[in-house]
Length: 408
Image 1 (tube, helix red, strand yellow):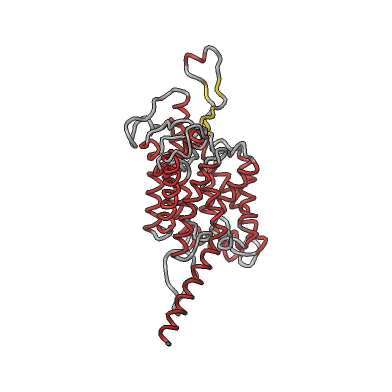
Image 2: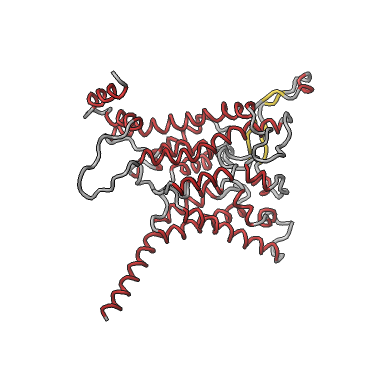
């Protein structure tokens, strides 16, 4: 008997029982649902929510793989085993098995815990509330490992995931009803509950034995914490990396947020598949550029001097803010969340612009936490319904005016 036949038999066995939602989630993940419309005016499509979520995951996979290589590269660079990349994106110093394996064994446990705990909570709620397992966590489960520090304790990640799924989504009614992005809710919980782990200005380097000439002395490295670019700039230090390094991603930072190149390619893929909103992505970039230009002009006018703790970030060229920190990743993969973002086309322009504008504002004025895109997106998640409300009311008023003109 085939696997499909066995699953069909099990489906009939569990039908109407408490375990039916949990089994159906596995069944529909492997096979297309049999329930289809045959008449009426329904729109027929091969796509469904699960396939949409899998498409978003596909867009993030390159960032995940690159993050594994980069974790190992940053470690080996810090301990002096290799030299800095000098020959572009396809540099042989970067794409090595050693770099990959170091990152793989550190990052994969984060992915396993994220999916294992998050989906476990989803299945539990489905069984208790007797509804189908919702697919929304498929994307959240991949987002979370990409936006947390690589050295975060697994138990801490598990606690945050439980909080994010239960408080950030299930209490509002589940997927499609939440007002805040679940992945950012998880990161915000970590930021406020465990601030020393989530300051945003440190990067992990794997514990390792020092180089050969130090082994005889019995020297050992338990861990190395190096500053990220934003952490360094927030403390008034000069830029230590080239623009190409920042664009390609050969820099310290969160796992999936360093390579602007791969994030842009992922964003183009989401736009091509009509899952991500190009209006939100473009307007967010415009908002960041405007805020960056304002600060650059403030510095040029001499209002802020080099003695100010805000000088270094304020004087950073406005366009470089787009490739610094997690801005690009947040705009492409989280600001465009169709559940928590604005729904109207005009509202998306306002929503995205304010995310970019506020992100750079927080980045400049909060040296203790030099990354502001998380807080900016969460803030605009709250205001997205209000933005849509006023956009719709504005359209209604315009239609009423046109109606009065025609009837006059």
